[in-house]
Length: 329
Image (tube, rainbow, N blue to C red; front, top):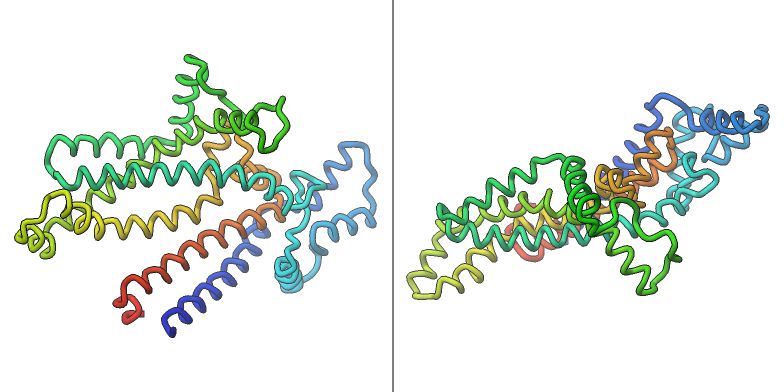
């Protein structure tokens, strides 16, 4: 119990530190969200008065002329109440509404692509690592090269081939805009069709890392004593690979997979931008471009919670699986 209490306490402190950094970083950027909104109001012919500025400051979460410690306290109170403020980029929409409208798209796209890439990469890595030095190792440099290719370059190639040349998939968007969003078969089919190219980009770009990591762990595992013992007992090669080598070699990949799922919330900013996909990555880019403090903080908060939660789950699972971890903790 002491191990688990220490872990939970550590992540509570990490969450507080993340919230503090989340509060400070946007305020170190040049510009002011209130000034941006007032400039947009003036461009539309509106009249800016001191009362207007005060109303906008309150709308965005408090008076920006207040001392920093007061703003910090107000920020923590609002976060605890679930109030993330109003977005400048998508004014007058609330930050929570903007995130709620885009987060399911990112979780579906990046989540499914991450699972597919991890499963295929780990399976191929186990198979290749079981026979090191054979022709199967020729797959490793090819997949590593794909992992080194910039996302946007790979995305543009896929758009040129599958969308422009062969007209198999749409090049941009998340669904057919002529359809009403919902759970109808037509809309789901459209969303799958529009999401195929972005998902394929993520899978191709990330599968090499999973393959290489699992392959190297398999090679290291083959020299362990329990592998030699299993062979001395006369067990079949397939059983040794599945029940002894792969089962132990996959543990680091499991930890990496849990952490990757935490980063799913962050989305793939470059991929979503290239395909104009309505995910959280495009919203984050828009927030940074417009100095949208509230939206940046809201998105960073969700990313922080997802990553910390994934790491906490991994630590707790390792404590249950391996008693030596609790002893060291």
